[in-house]
Image 1 (tube, rainbow, N blue to C red):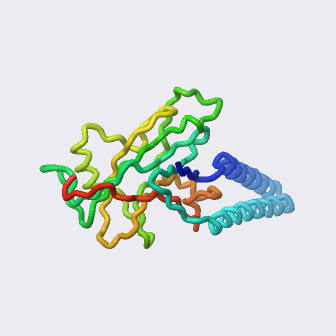
Image 2: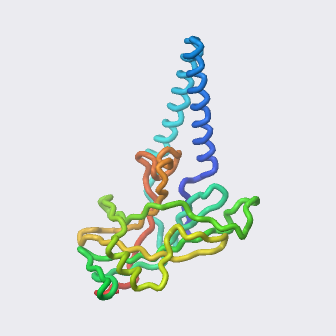
Image 3: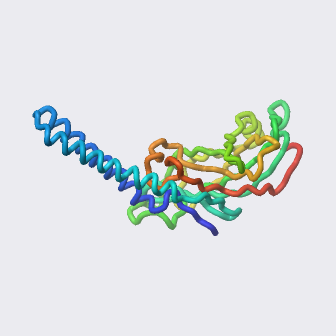
Length: 239
């Protein structure tokens, strides 16, 4: 198995971010007190300290980004995301291509080719903290999902294609379905790729905007991505 973590050393990264925010908050408070008390030296030094701390943090943020490398995981690879006291892993179960998804009257025809990707979400029981109950459910954080081609173009989930596929399934499981340690489930996602799209890979990432400010996170500016390789196992005219 080929695991990759996003970001690496997540607890330390989160603590560094929260610690920096706390220091900047204290500096801003001292700056305000200095202004109100008319103590210019206090205000000056607190502002200088805040700028220094922010500068160091953003230098580390950009440094981690420019030295990062893009990775494409193989078919059995798992991409892990930190949920503070545990980790959620994502992997590809299968990939199918089709021109038409669903059946009349609820069917959709692709502009190019539909990629039906089965994504497994797994709550890795080996990553939970000692303080977390083993029967406590977890709702995974919201994720942003897209297919990326070799030109860097992104293709989001096809609304019509997914609706048609859901119409044929007795139960469709969202990526935010709660689960307990050791449990997993499969989510079917549909993407409409143009004929010119080459080397498609699945990109799953955090949807939370604050991740743009986490050192070593793929959502931070200029940081390279961790992608899941897609190799269609079957193809058909209609699915």
